[in-house]
Image (cartoon, rainbow, N blue to C red; front, side, top):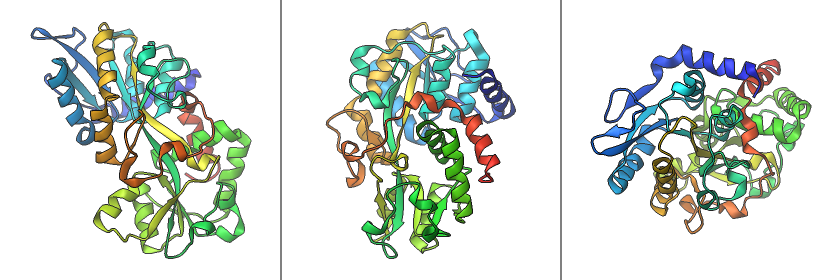
Length: 344
């Protein structure tokens, strides 16, 4: 990773470090690995406590290994690990997206994950060098209002969205992290200039700007837009309250508009208890944990034998492009491109 990216991430962490919350059996993580007669893993988690906290508790109960968690923003925590260097107390980094995992891998801050764990997950959803592993997946989709569009009318690529007939009819959320990760994927898959061309064409086509994925789906339900660029799991939250909520998903085949990103784990080079760290990874890949994420947040399980969430299209039937998810680490470059094209 270019040095300017590391500096940018560190600056972000320093500016927002007060937002990082430590919780668990101690007020702040320590690297001694001792908690009574047992072990303590220090986990830096970019995943929220409401979702992931119950899994930490179950892991402790089943293994006897204590977990000391520091919660925070995924990018900020990655920057903190880089800033802490070899003094970092962290054993595990649990990231919300692959780009941050790729950033730490590029800086040599991750260690090899055993083959028996890596082999449980499709190669598309883990580091090609074996340095991190996906735990759950989320797909980008074209969500659409079913009262305004039939399924066959929905565009089949991100480029179709730039055509004049879709002017003013598409919603996006440029300030949202998942959208920015998607743009990083466009840059990786299509190339820098084509990504710029797409953003400029979208800007010229008067997209409707929303705050986040949730507000896009709300806007779709109200008929404010006809198509929205979102992640797969937001719609289920609305359908749980209203089975007739007038929105459905379309997955453009072979197009970056249906890319699959992951939430995943890296074991850090500072860990002095790799066996406990590997046990943590193994637990998060267990059917128990995978079912929790599928039922609790409509995320895609990444191991075989677990049904997709809420009757969504199985991940095996989605045809995303082949993207090295480790290559999505250049958030700074994505933000610059969004600013240069006027999307931010």
